[in-house]
Image (cartoon, rainbow, N blue to C red; front, side, top):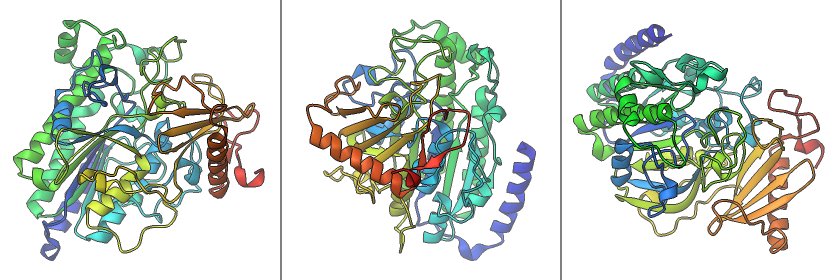
Length: 470
């Protein structure tokens, strides 16, 4: 697969080089570094400055620290879903997984018109036809990157290509020279940046790492370093710490390449995870407290531990070493990138994301305007390695409503005061709870989201839509 990707790229570069009339340097470049399963507190960046619990007490990420100091960290950033495939779709298309009707891994994706919807690369190329787009690493979706608008890619890769075996061995540390392919992927990404720079073409690069998803791999140098370091109270797995260090080193290589080519002043670098971190290591072992504390639970659930992710942006005009309380999610990337690139003449249909470009430009107002007024997180299935209760969440402002479908239970949280979702305000603020529940159900009905019914689990697929029952 790697050789096939490189051959495509060689052919593509040759065709680009012959088209001198398309050379242009004014439009900004975009580098999106999407990591896999990295927790909100899984790096050494304090996502809330002054809150030690919002960073890891063991993992060291000096390059991400540097990126955060040179730009803006989003304390209230979330993935659009607590699992990878729905989240990745939302990033590409600016739509919620509920609207896409793709709410877990392994679902049939034949209903999704991958080649027809406006996507990140297609939107940029509509704004400026000289943009080149590449996707390297884990695709984790249906269709292919080329269908979605990428000029070059590694193809429709999944976890296995990055080294994943779904058994107990995934939690054992293996020492390798290129853990989770972080350095090979980064080499290809840097080659793409070099080529675009030589051609004088603006670019959109998405580097989707397989790390820090299992299997756990690390270099001998990083493993030796963490073995000589005192483990933390929350984070103690040496292999995970080593893999995180290797991932961060590869980020440093990419940032160094951007700097070497003098592209810092015209390149936005966006770093985020596809969902929150796993709540425990190893795997499905029961736990009293999540690895993501002070957040509740983790990957697979729409509690904050499953949704909140590290999210850092640097680039032209972005204030340095600033933390913002703006609530953003993966679906916001497409409209934000579009605005930063110059804006579209007409927005695509059925977007759920809103632009936070004004936040990146230092605006005092941090509200993000979205077509539907809130953010919907839809998990309508039972999953025994998680809560094992079908549920959905609706976030509006700093309030979050959780609705469980097995018994109709509703929980309401003030995330500004209660990051860990410990105090249910549904009885204290009944009108707000009723309004938010009504907004959630109305939205799910509008987009004909898959609806839970008895027996629907993580592994089976016979969903009905909300339209037929609400």
